[in-house]
Length: 250
Image (cartoon, rainbow, N blue to C red):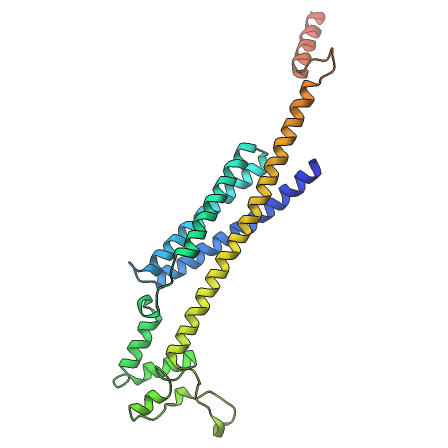
């Protein structure tokens, strides 16, 4: 049983290390998101909650590692409760949070809107946007034709053959939508990875608590089954023998 206990203990410590790294990643991503999100928006609230969640994860890991290293059953049980609370909070965050729409999120969408609406006065802004995002027009290259304008050079893909240039097939709005969907899927996958690791840590902690309880029970039974004539407190025997030795010397 001791070998099984030590195996679960050290794998649990390794899992908690991964858990802390994920928590630090959550805080780092939330901090970057707060810099780009506008205040008083659902996006800003989501990043604030993620920042608090990442900090809570780090504190839970420190508490859990202390319980595993010190072999304290009560601390392991409290750590199990913390994991259950974190799982419930992340489940609610994943299923009850609706990502804001592209227009309400601001940021990149406002940058595209300003670049397109100021096409007459500042065409270079839109051209720079098209070059950096590999897109053409607000809804496509036909937008320039509707405005009776030539398709700018920023809409053409850079190729080695100048005579075979092709226009970017995606519009800038479509590219922006695709980028936002990718970010949302990445964040959701990251959160599910945290949930999966928490479930694994929860199972480890429950198994560790059960084994620790059985080991404590076995130690108590072993103490009760002391052979007759043998005192249960060897330290007191040592002290008594020391006193008797001193008295004999005196």
